Each structure stands twice: as structure tokens, then as C-alpha cells.
Image 1 (cartoon, rainbow, N blue to C red):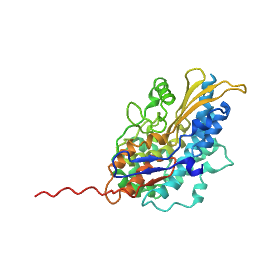
Image 2 (tube, one colour):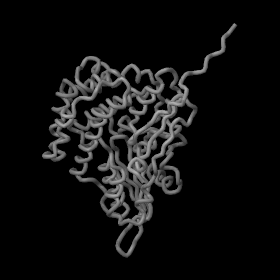
Image 3 (cartoon, one colour):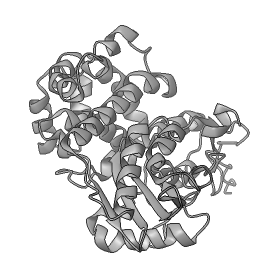
Image 4 (tube, rainbow, N blue to C red):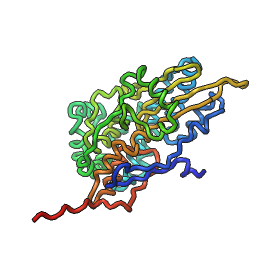
Length: 372
């Protein structure tokens, strides 16, 4: 299979009846992992899911450790590396992909600006990169100290980002300014995934569904409905943003960078692991696009423990569910700019694969009959 085939694509159909999202993303984790040595699972899944490889490797490592009855807790160094990798992924999306994917966005800044970010300085370790990040953000993104920006945001989580981007002249402020009106007008239902509120109760139930429902990873639901996960559902978030429009989800991705760069950033991303039956465990990590879950069952072999089965439940399958929050939003889009609005909505929910917008769909609403 080609690299494009391994990744798959999303097809969005704005203005159509549900389902408005179709995915060719293959669910290959179980097929590739079965029979491999348990110790190889982190590397296997990290190679399969290259965009967020660090989160996959760490989650798989903890899942295997829990299934073996070993200590399944990340070290300080591992958590710092996850923090840096997640911030790097978010910054890359904002500074590069948003300019490419958002209609009406200004041209991206020169690559040299991104390369000046300490997260790309290979001579520094992750802790040193993160220590230098607040000054870089204050100068290149915020035009003010990071702590001051977050303090005002916490006092006015609904309005501060809009006020700031209308006044500041930095590249992210200019970019957000071009999108604010269109994305604020795009109403969205809010259906946050809250699996980590009580993980000791929810995770065993989730594991049962992962184990017994063949299509669950491709079309997950919780409590009878599709849910959404992202930076706006962080477990430790002191001021969760309201989710009444697409703009708030876009802003949540921007704020996520600042939270990761703050002094408490190492504790911003929740993670955990839970042993289940003998040789079976589930592990989870909050990553750039939301909550990642791995379930694994191991078996003995002459050469040591090996993978009997595993499942990977990624954020994209929640957020791009054919009947989920984004799909419902797409169904409401009509008018001349519905394709552009569909692109904006997709960027707000941030798939880990490329997407196409079906140009064959007529976004123009039907004319109402004239009344005498």
C-alpha cells in the first residue's frame, strides 16, 4: 500500500444529509501488531502513526507494562518529551497548515521564523527547549508576556482571544483575525468526551467495547452518541472554553500551545494506564488532537510475551465520526461559501489526515415556495 493509502483521506460533504463525512482511513493497528514481541509494540505503532508518534509510543509502552503487571507510569523525562512534542505539533499546524488550509488566510511567514522556535533546536534537550519557549512566544506570537496573556484569558475565556487578535500585529493574530467572523458564525453543538472524569469506571467499559465490537475504533460512540475530543476537553483545564461555535475550537488549539509552554505545562496532558484481565490493559494519553487510547492483550510464547490483539482509538475517529459534531455542523452549511466554511470547520477539528470537500454537493438551499 502507498503512503497515501496507509494514511487514508477524509471526504466532507457540506450541505448534505447525514452522514456528511466518509473516511478511507484504514484500521491497521491490530493487523500489524498481532504476533509481534510485546516490547516491539511502541515502535510498531509509532511507525504506523507518524504524525503523533511520540504519544503513540508512550501510550503503547504503558499499555504493555500494565498488561505485564509492571509499573506503568511515565518518568519526568518522558512527560517532558511528550509536552515538547505536543507543543511542536500544535505550533507546526498553526504556523504552517492553517495558512494552507484556511480560506482567506494570509501567506505563511518565512520558514526561518518557525526554525527560530526553540522546539526545533536539536542542540537543546526537551526541558531546555520548553524553558526557552515562553520568550519566543511572547516575542513572535503574543506581543506580551505569556503569563499576562493567560491571566487575561482566564478572566475572559470567551472574549479575550478575539480582542487580542484584533489588536495585535503578530502572524498568528493576523491569521486568526481573518477567520474570526466566519468561524464565530458557524454554530456547533458541544458534546465533549469525558472519559477521564472517572477513568476507573469508564476505561474498563471502553476496553470491553474495544475488545468485542469490530467497528468501534472506526465509529466510536459513548453513552449512545458520538462525542468530540481535543484541546478543549483537557482534564485539568481551569477554564474550559464554551463550545458553541467553530471559533472556540480553533482558539483552544492556540491556547493549548500557551498552556504547554507555561510553568505547569508538564502536568497539562493527562495520561494513565489500567491493568484489566491477565495480560490485558488499557492506556491513554491526551495528545495534540485529543484523547488517544490503546488497548492490548498479550500472550505467552517461547520467545517471551507477544501481542495477541490490540486496538488504537485515535481522536480523529471521534471528531470525524460520520454523524458526530463536525458532521452535524457540515449538514447545516449552505450558501456560496459553504465549501470554505467546511474547510474552516475541518481545520478546527484538526484531522490527522488530508481531507477533500465534495464539490458535487449543491450548497444552495432550496427556494421557499412563493406565497400569494
